[in-house]
Image 1 (tube, helix red, strand yellow):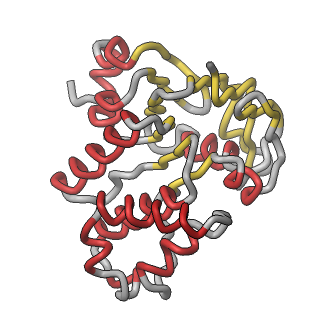
Image 2 (spheres, rainbow, N blue to C red; image 1 turned 45 degrees about the vertical axis):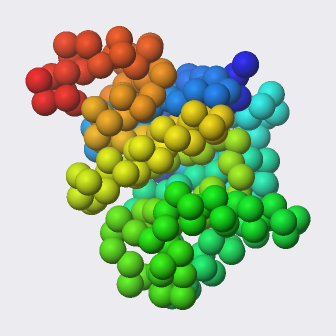
Length: 236
C-alpha cells in the first residue's frame, strides 16, 4: 500500500525551478532513499512534502489524502514528521525540553512518557544530558536529539534530510543502525542523503535526482550496481 505519493511535483524559487515534475512513491513499511548531488533539488522535495514550501504544481498524497498546501503542523499531526537538514534543534532549550516539544501534539501523557522512554533507551546519551542546553551538545548528540525529537511525535512516515551531514563515521554508523531498527519496527522512511552508500544499504527502493528530475529509480540493490550511480555517487 502506498503511504506517500508525489505526483508531477514542481517547486520554484522565483523564476528558478528547482524541482521539475517529480513522481515518487513510498510504500508503507519500507525505506526509500533519494540521492543526488548538492543543488539537485532533494531538500526542496522534502520541504514541499512536509509543508514548509508550497509546490508551484503537482500533488502530495499521504495515506490516500491530498495534503498539498497543508500547514506543517497539520501534516506533522497526521504522522508525517521531518528531521530537517542541519538538525535545527532548539539550542537555547534543554535536551529534555526539546524532546517535550517533539511530543507537543501527543494528548495522552502515558503515550508521551512511553515514547520518551524509547528515545532514551535508543540514545542513552540524551538521558545523561537531559538538563544540558541542546546547543552545547556535540554534532552527533544533536543529530540524536533531532531524531529523538521526531520519534516523540510517533511518525508513521519519517522524513530525514541529510542525517549524516558533518558527523564522524562512527556516529553515522550509529544513526543508520537506529534507522534500520526503526524500519524493522514498522516506521516508514524517506531519506535524502549524500552518503549514497549508507542510504542505499538502508533502503528498499531508490531514486536518483539530477537538476530537479528523476533520472533513475528502482530497487536499491539494483541502483547500487548501476555504473552511472557508482561513478557519480559511490566513488567508483
